[in-house]
Image 1 (cartoon, rainbow, N blue to C red):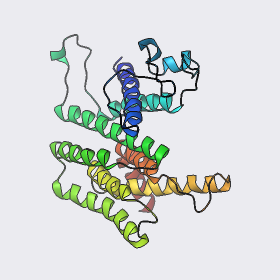
Image 2 (image 1 turned 60 degrees about the vertical axis):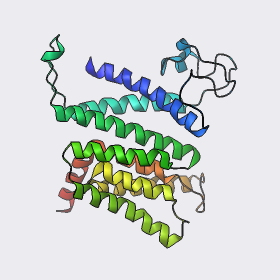
Image 3 (image 1 turned 135 degrees about the vertical axis):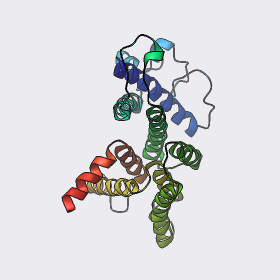
Image 4 (image 1 turned 135 degrees about the horizontal axis):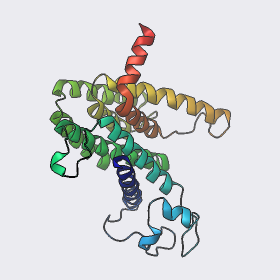
Length: 264
């Protein structure tokens, strides 16, 4: 039941993230009723049920019959699944008691669960925004850095650990930016590298960078082989970095342990 409720909560929050991403790009206020991006008609509540409404409407607006982007159900479902995985990883100790006073939450697990939810939401926004418009916005990464730093310090991560990880993440991309004079990567990648370091700490930042470059190389080679991209084409690398950060956030310790055992 807890997993089901968190899944539903994730669907609803995924719907909010879709709205936030669209309005952020269009420079519109987040306040106000949802509307169709094509005909701008307000969406009724029964047409705004996450995932369900998309299926019932067969992926089309009720008013103008324009197709609804697959981004909307995909983000809703992905957010719900990730919320469930975060909940499982947090390892809550919950009894079947009927009274809230009998539910035993270790306080560190509550902070860990809330922290990871916030991290996931920020990374999803970065993933989608870079995928669609090839931009990593400082207005997302900079506030996320401040929040990540505060939450990780509350969980007992050391200043030095976070400073080293942020320096490695940001410095890695800063060096590429300076060497290429901005041709290889943009300034947003530097900010994202710092954010990754603050989120993951040392040495998990190395795991995330490794996963991002391996996955980027594999998918890039596949696109070249399928002639979907050319050698001169730009690839939104922020999508690989944010996805690798999510994977490392969930399974970084196991991946690092597997890799070290493989070597030694």
